[in-house]
Image (cartoon, rainbow, N blue to C red; front, side, top):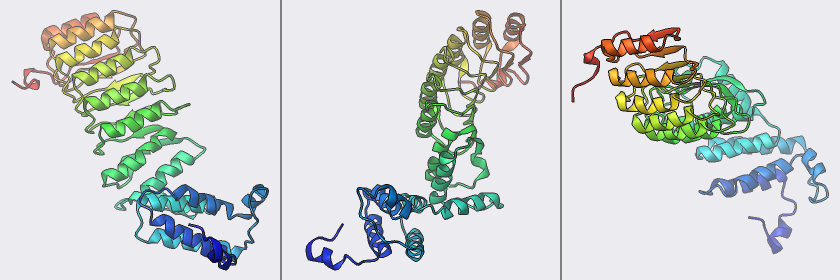
Length: 350
């Protein structure tokens, strides 16, 4: 990358902006991104303030405002060229290394404007995620539905931002179990601020439930509300969530598994976790194809130890008269028991 021998002597008087432009062009041609970090370093040490800090190990380079201006212009031109979102983000980091926050300011202006109908590009998704992650303040709410993100890759780039927010609404976003792995990692991070997580109407399946349960078991996890309505969770997912509920570390107060194909077998598995002391106040199992058998398992589990549960939603199931009776007779401590809109027609025939 650097000139040697005679060519080095000829290049000693090359202006800093020209030198950095050459390095940038070399880095942009890389398919692996192995020069990205080095490029950021070079732009960082181009500042006078950083050169003073490293004066014992670096030769001082004369710099001036005009040179800095040209360097910034070169970076912005590089961003406007046909580069990958990864290279685009690295160039943004180069600007930040030079104390230039124009990309962040442009993103903030975009978010403050009427974003309806405006589609976020992959680069903008990465920029937004980095802004949230780098912020010293925890974001109160991250709602994917507020942004027009059409591509799966764009949503994937934004998912890591849940690490620095209190409430994350990621509903109906075509997320998969791969995204659950990112969320589970966030739940396990030190001092995790995430308290409410809504992943409803995504294709998470049992594998996603298993990944989330790993995060829920972490001593760092402080999650209070988890919504997984319509996420294709079945028996295996119930087993994993039951294990998380029975963990002494669980802080869950509300769990929504509505509109999943749990059936009685899944509810029985979930009940094993409810038998042990837990902090759950609200449990929603609406539209889960539960019959009298599942209701009996729930009633037995919730009455076997001092339960914190105050609300149980079993609407749109088929508990039958006997199922309703065992629930109402056993769970007298509930503030609300919902078995509305039930009936045999809620259970499809095989």
